[in-house]
Image (cartoon, rainbow, N blue to C red):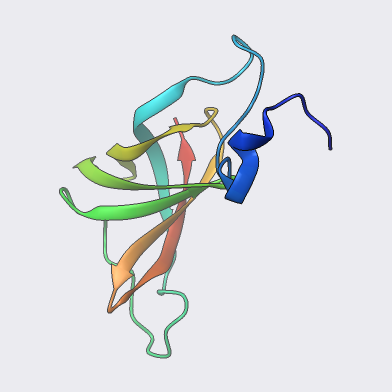
Length: 117
């Protein structure tokens, strides 16, 4: 796909995880996010059968949205709604699915998904 972007912006995959579009046509850039959470029954990627615990306040989670990745600090964790303060702002539309990972052992493991509010 060809664009009119300056090649210096795209070198070394400098735009990976970013969204490019015309002003006024993109979703807002967010530094905090509220998501409806759906946790898996078991943690993915480990041999043991560990049950996924509920998300706790002040826990750090990694969120994958489209090609963007951002860590978020949980500010509020209610029954199935979690509010996060993001370390890296993201551009996401309400209704988009977001993969949620938690640090388990020495690596990030998938624990569920969420829907952006």
